[in-house]
Image 1 (cartoon, rainbow, N blue to C red):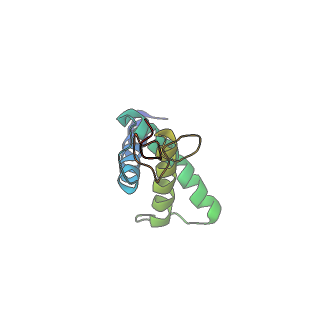
Image 2 (cartoon, rainbow, N blue to C red):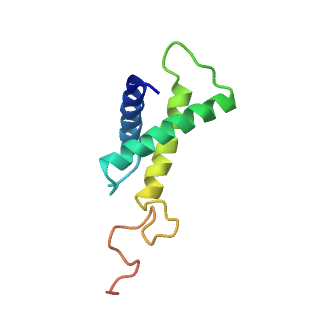
Length: 105
């Protein structure tokens, strides 16, 4: 991979990661570097998934491919930041720091 290819992957990954963080509700407690890494992985996986589904590459913006990429990045960010509810006490419906019952320290 050339230097321009690496730069393009980082730039596209950052944009995909930022869009994914905008789609997710609330605050995500992960670093910018992790956001970019998840965005790069989601961009690659989303492109592959779109090709498997039969989305053709066009000369313009591939909106369906972009939706796949942002959706996968949002899932990745939710899982990494602990907002997915898998194995964590604070899932989608709970507030940060809440124990679920009133009056319990």
